[in-house]
Amino acid sequence: VNKKTLLANSNRRSVSNDLMEEGGVPAARGSIDFAFPPELADALHRLYHLRRGSLISPGPLQSLDDRAAKRSLFLRLPLDDCLCMMAPSLWSSNLYSSLEPIPSDTLALWSSCVIAADYHDGLYVWSGRETFGANYNGIRQDCVEFLNERAFNRFPMPELYMLSEGDSMSRRITALLAPSHADPPEQQLVHFPALANLTPAELVALREKFRFYDASSDASFRVWFWSVASASSNARNEGLSLCE
Image 1 (spheres, rainbow, N blue to C red):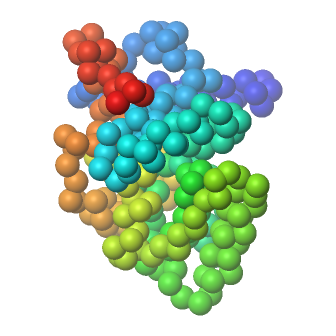
Image 2: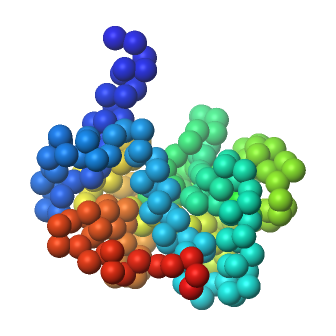
């Protein structure tokens, strides 16, 4: 069995487990694999982030002129830039590992890690509570250099934000992430297997960071998917237009 086959099988299991029906009952594997092959798993998550991001979501954080300018850029920029505008990309690092890609979810904000995030017009370096010491300054500098290299020659030039856990400004990055803390614990582990490396106490503390959360105003990826994929969904009548 070659590496490509193993990777495809692994992705297929991940998508099938991640897209569980409400109540924790697995959806029919055949229909899920037929409608959403593993190659489209990333596209589904990007579509989710696009829907809740500033390009489409009618949030109060940007003026209509800013949104119109961003949409104009989205239609004209190269593919890589457009993908970066659709969903943030995250990497995590600590004293024992270099930058590794992680899901763009709230449960990725571990107190023991420094996180680099790229959302096209915004670059973020977030330091967990356990990384405030001077021995992590080198890791933070590596994150800054990594992000600046990714954004080299990018238009418009993104702003760089240095954020710390517990700081009020850290909401800049938290607001970009999918609220995976709202999902059942077993679904959290399926989507982000690295959570299994945390102790039960660390998992509880991680989830408690987001106890002030309104699920009705910001659905997780799992909840959103089944709200539009179920047979009783009225989502087709509630879509948002780019002209709004």
